[in-house]
Amino acid sequence: MSDTHIRVLDSDYERLGGLAERFTQKIGEYRFLAMVEGHCAALSIEIDGRFVCTIYEQRPAVCRELEPASAACLSEIDQNRDSSLIALESLMKKSRARAEISPVSSSAPSAVSEAVDAEP
Image (cartoon, rainbow, N blue to C red; front, top):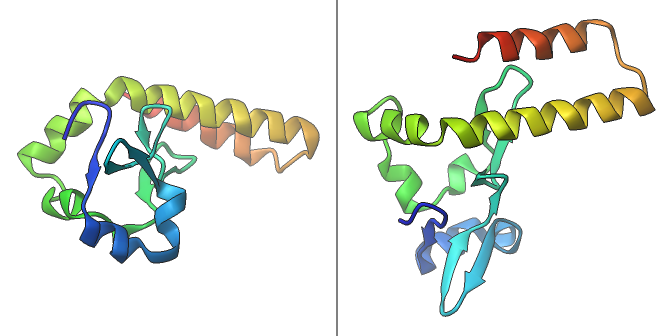
């Protein structure tokens, strides 16, 4: 695994099935998980700032090997904290833009503010 690309094996690609083209990209002879704003394209950023894998059941082997809350997992979180904040800011901007187009309940902006205030 490199800092910007996560290798997808042939077996991973097959496991992804119809999602493979959406969440992978081919570079040279190899396939990698597609990256968006510094994180895997399969990660959905929840309004509370949590990242949720949208392909969890089909996730690649490298993701399966990373045990939640393990030292390796916590190290990845720490190393990628800045890109997580950038992604959360991007989500907030998109959310605000959507709110300007079609107003939502008044509780939504406070949930976003709480997520930002809670971020270390």
